[in-house]
Length: 84
Image 1: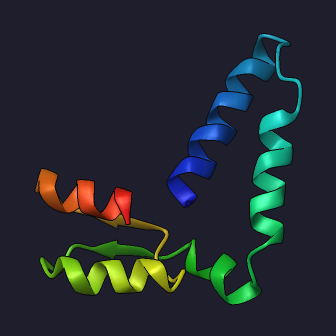
Image 2 (image 1 turned 180 degrees about the vertical axis):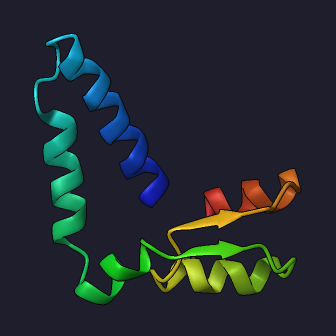
């Protein structure tokens, strides 16, 4: 969720420089954040280092307490985490 939000914000920032941002991306991000409780919002700030245990990382991500994962270069892990 955080990755999508970051991509959308980055996209909007680029468009603003080009005076083409209509605010749709910002409204989408605001609506996603509004549906999250404070614990989930704080969880999106947490960066995990891969433990190698993909099932454990998926459980943590599902709980909303993981904003991103660092140092996981296994494509199968990354794909599973993106699709959960």
